[in-house]
Image (cartoon, rainbow, N blue to C red):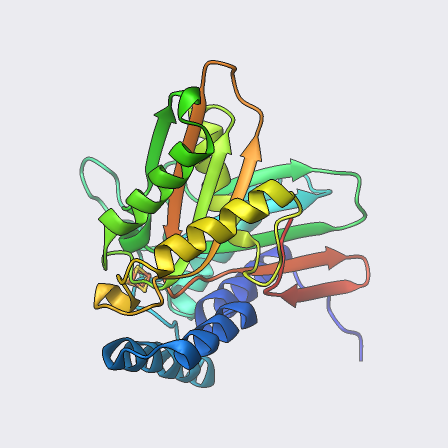
Length: 289
Ligand code: SF4
């Protein structure tokens, strides 16, 4: 029997199904580890409910949260201009087939086409390379956590301590609204727009993959300890597990600037990647570049 190759549209449907129904292994392990060290009974029961919910979602093949988010796509490798159309068609089909909640609306009229498309949608970040593959990653982002995004244009004199203070304050001010414990993505440097984009892209790195930059790795650990010592806890109801990880991306910036952005993800940190080669398609939920 001849095996028909999957179309990119089919790959996008599968990718969205995987991301929405199966928690990435590193997030699952981090939740289990957190339950092991929690001594607060409310925090322990919240973590138990989260893990129970995600196991049921995977078993039943249903989305793990009613807010299936806005999917943010990252494309890397070789591709042509037809890719955007394939991703859009895959997203519209996935909205019907999985199903996904139709979340996208016109920002003024609040009109909803019911297919998660519309002006400017879907969001796709492109990175063309000479690699012999096309890699598509998706990060469905719920509004509860996305609405807590913050950008600060700090005075460079505030330095690392200023960055740390800004990030910790952003998460603590958000409280239980982004459904903690999740992952805190932080962008440092660049321009204001690049900084916010880096904060979100940072969420693609699993919590068990350390930052390659030793200074940023130390800063991630410092912010992680500060947040988990705060007592905010799961769902903001108290406990030792406010975050499962802190992920930082940085870029050079103007000598007179120090941009910092915080993009929080909830416990339902959803991500999946498909690598398309001439031989077929590989799916995973680990590190995306
Ligand atoms: S913040 Fe996350 S877990 Fe909470 S409702 Fe939104 S998508 Fe669901």
